[in-house]
Amino acid sequence: MPNIKSSERSVKTDAERRANNFAVKSTIKTVTRKTVEAVGAGKADDASALLTKASSVIDKAVAKGVIHKNAAARKKSRLARKLNAIAK
Image (cartoon, rainbow, N blue to C red):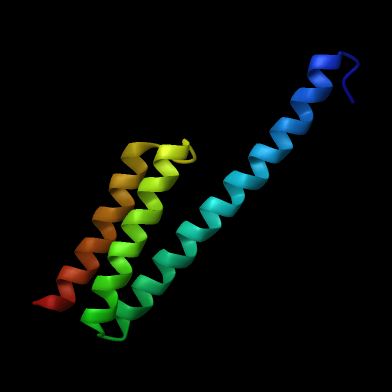
């Protein structure tokens, strides 16, 4: 445990940030998994709607600074490639 007052406050805010980031990352994983499952089931319409939602969630995570913009672009690209593979 830190002895310095500012460090004590920092520990608290770090814990809050970590919890918030964890929640956002969990949401990203959930919408990604649902999209991949819809693609696997061959439901192109549902997968398309889920891809739009996933892209929105990922973009919001970038805006909050939870993930890097290149990581977000990679995630969205991989999801789109999976969807396009079944659309053909």
